[in-house]
Amino acid sequence: MSGGRRTAAFLTVLLGGAGVMHLVRPEPFDSIVPPVLPGPARTYTLASGAAELAIAGLLAHPRTRRVGGHAATALFVAVFPANLQMAYDWRRARPRKRAIALSRLPLQAVLIAQARHVAR
Image (cartoon, rainbow, N blue to C red):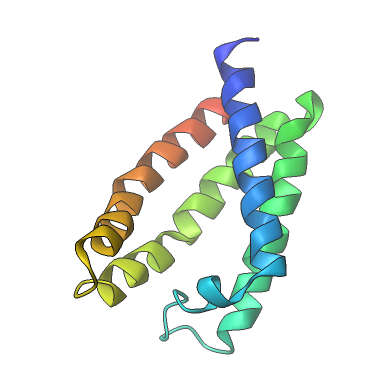
């Protein structure tokens, strides 16, 4: 399996799992939706979960993988404010929770780079 196919497979599993979790256990995701966004947090949680599942499907098939890579890039950029919100909300949490929240920030850049690799 080539590096691009491995990366696509990894992103497929990651996004598929995240999408399912957004739909079956949305509460933790609701809590990190930035409050400045209009409308209910649950709407953003469910929409991002559906988008994650759709993009996982695009990444899973060779014919749509390139489009899936572009869509994953856009999604990872779009959800970055939620990671910032989590880091802000958890700034006074126990060290382990702070570390988790802060580590998500550079991880998002890695995911964006991986999605761009698949898109190429």
